[in-house]
Image (cartoon, rainbow, N blue to C red; front, top):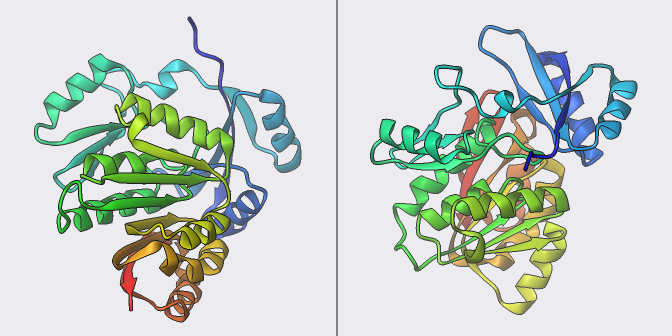
Length: 291
């Protein structure tokens, strides 16, 4: 059976305008990707939908163009420009889905587990700086934990790549919270492809409300990740200690260098010490623990 058609709206924008575009799309709840090739000066913002009509509405508002995505755009042919993201000595994140391609890639990267996350209508394929850095920090932190003896909470799970990675790294219980039902559907499918669908609890809902409910019920997690918009992180921060174990680890990302101060101040006010700040381009990822 042929796959349902997929369409992409995209627009090239100057780097100086990227913050404004990302804020606009984020505030309107539109999942997007932003990419820039090394040799280019402008960023390409893209939105993927199965409904072309919705993307034509974006084109009318913002300009740009709408195209149907070809199968070869999702699954590059051998010898093409294939995406490879190496995460320490543990994972290789790729966009391919076909078993033959994955077997070939695994043979090319012995000792690393392959995570297959094609570009879809959910944030977090691994190519974005925040997702990649969160993955690296999750791998680093997991080396200090006993497999099967720690739990993981992913707030704003998007494609579900962190939730799947946590299971592969030894997390016992994994909860993925996402308010976008389409993204949650993508995350479930990604988990099924990696054999982890039954091991991850998916929650469609608001991260703030979920944390408040979980805290009242006594649920605690050793590792919590939140790759979210800065304003939401600031609002969420006071709720995070209530879902973290006393020796818990917090990985936060999704905020710009210009927003790091407000996120850090919110963390301090909540009793969380953010002790590690990693900058990748304009984005910041931070790791902290309860004070």
